[in-house]
Amino acid sequence: MVEIIPKKVAPLSRWVNILFYFSLALLVFCIADFFILGNSIKKSQKALTNLEDSLLSGKTSERISLEKEILKYQKKTEDFSKIIGGHLETLKVFDLLQKNCHPKVWFSSFSLDSKERQVDLSGETQSFESLGQQLLIFQGEDSVESVNLEKVSISKEGKIGFSLSLSL
Picture 1 (tube, rainbow, N blue to C red):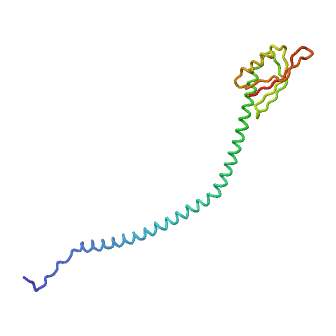
Picture 2: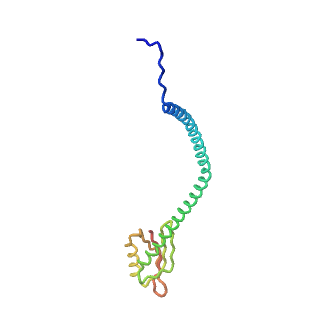
Picture 3: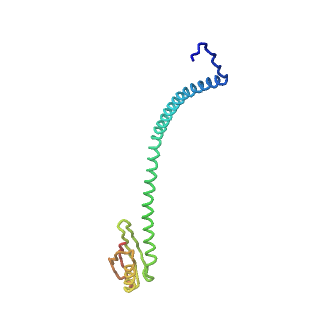
C-alpha cells in the first residue's frame, strides 16, 4: 500500500557525519597534496638540472687544465723512461766488457754509439794469440752481432796494438 503520511527519516549517527566530513577533508587534502608535490618535484628537477649543468661547465676549464698538466707529466715520464732505458743498455755494454775481457788484453780507449749500437775499442795485448782469443770470446757472445778487427800494429816493445768494433 501507499503511505500517505511521511515517516521521519532516522537521523544519521554523529560518528557517520564526522567520518564523512573527515574523509571529504582527507580527499581534498590528498588532491591538493598531489598537485603541490608534483609541482615541487618539477622545481627540484629543474634545480638539479641547473646544478648539474653548472658543475659540468665549472669542471670543464679545470678539467682541461688538469688534463694538460697530466699530459705534460706523462710526456716527461715517457722521456725519462727512454733515457733510463738507454742508460740501462749502456750499463749492459760495461757488463759485457767486464765479463768477456781476456786477462792478457788491455783496452786503452772506448767509444759507444748507443743509437747505432756500436762499440769501438782500442787496446794492447802481449801476443796475437791472446788477441785472437779475445776476438773469439766476443764472437761467442750472444749479444754481439759482429766483431770487426779494424787495425793491428806492433809497438817497439813488441806489444800488439789493435782497434776493433763490436756491433750489438
